[in-house]
Length: 374
Image (cartoon, rainbow, N blue to C red; front, top):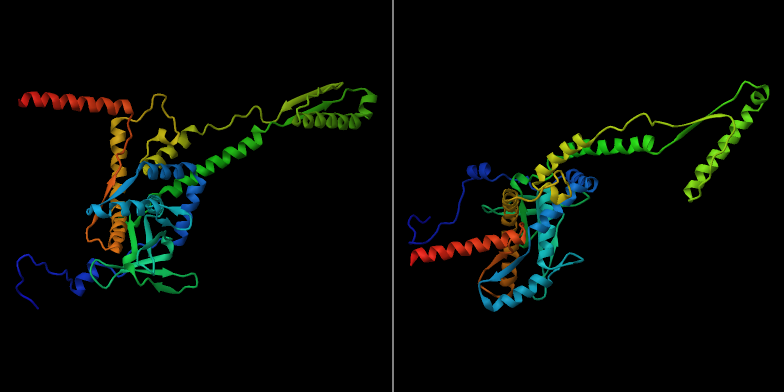
């Protein structure tokens, strides 16, 4: 064991077994339970506003470009970024990032694989994995991970090359949808009751009452007249389905009323809005971006734009090491020694007029500062 080291030499990180058992658990809470995964999938399918919010976040996160430190490989890196196969139908590293972020937001963690070509060692494509079928454990070395595939027959298979796996998770592996199933169940129950009430009262039904007179002849033909009135009424209602208008003519005392016309439907605006406010607050998306016009003059203010921008920047910080690792993996396959970095597009959430006015004020401020400096 070396006691003295040369100047500038770093020691390899070592942890004693007791510390490793405390700081690095044997199994990390990374794999998503299959039942929980199905629950979140059904939740997005049942509540459209949740699915729309996640898709909005993915689109607002914006595009990016991989930049190589060695300019000689920039053209190859651009070609790889735009044409790399993703799964069976996708293409470009941007498609991979969108699917990766979709899994990250929905399930709390995401995993992907860099598939290498056996002939030349270059990247043949990218694959978005099913996080519910992968268990993540602590590796043999400090700060390393091992991945195990959980098969349907109960057996397990460890991935031999974990360096080809890219993985990320939200804090604690908790999904962005955590806490929404309970609220969504109440919301769907209200919508179901609204549908049932409209089936009962919204679909207008009539009560036709025939009141015979006290004549002896009328009393003997009450049954026949009632059946005739019912046939004529049914024929008139059925003709209306095909655009034909038929008048109903009858003799005698006949009363026609709408069943349930005196009852009013419950006002569900208040409870539905309260539930939607909780869902929107959890997803951190301004309401009007989801089609919720709660105010006639509602628009995105600078405070809302700053908050949403910080949320998008947070998701970008999670994606940056994953995308950078893929780019460096490709450069390594080309024999390049340099690294790469990612350049994100500017997040544009304000109106063009507001941005132009801000640029004008900044230019005026720089001009005034230049005058004061002279």
